[in-house]
Image 1 (cartoon, rainbow, N blue to C red):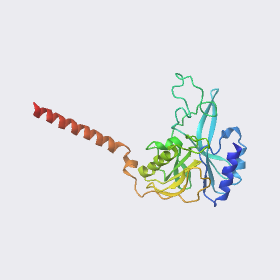
Image 2: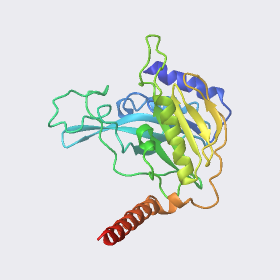
Image 3: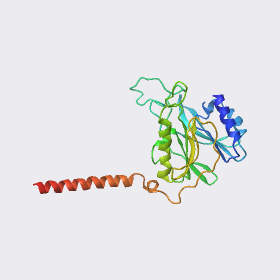
Image 4: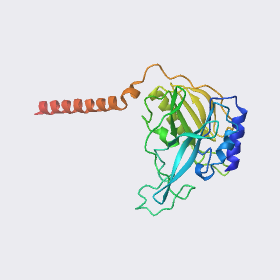
Length: 267
């Protein structure tokens, strides 16, 4: 766990001074409350006025029960947690067992218990800049964006997809996942920063075009600016699936009327 942490620290130190340093999902792989002293140590390389965002599990004890969340944590240069987002859309059988009371399986996550789903989408704010954090599976669902967001952040860990005996990924999963989340940028007209363990990481503009990229298993970092969103909201950002629903209803009604007239003439 510490090796992974040190690797992210060393890569972060190589880049230029940035307003925002972003690590992927599982950038910190142990619950943050377990070792609160770790954050001042992490903060040592965060420049004054900058922020670090990292994936990390967090937990709380509620009514004698311990609950865990898969979270995105935001820290300032003092090592203080100033914001967090808990993943809403958990992976079935990966992060929790659905219908656990009916299925007597043990937990499939390293913590030994299921994760708890977050309740609400949340925007992070830096000065006048707002962005929506989406963790891994969150980003495959359309419409998971707060209206005030200027851009999207997708942190993920796709290293668990099927690999061969040499540890190389031979699944199409990471590529499919990457293209699916690119679709969110086109729908919303918002750029995206995608930060992934083992790739694929990228800066993506609001038209889904890749500005900079780290390929699968390419170790490194990306320095860059977040592209600007499009000037006006897209139809999807304004109305969601409503136009499609209206179109489908109109087609069904038209088809029904046509069939009714055909049957009338047959008689």
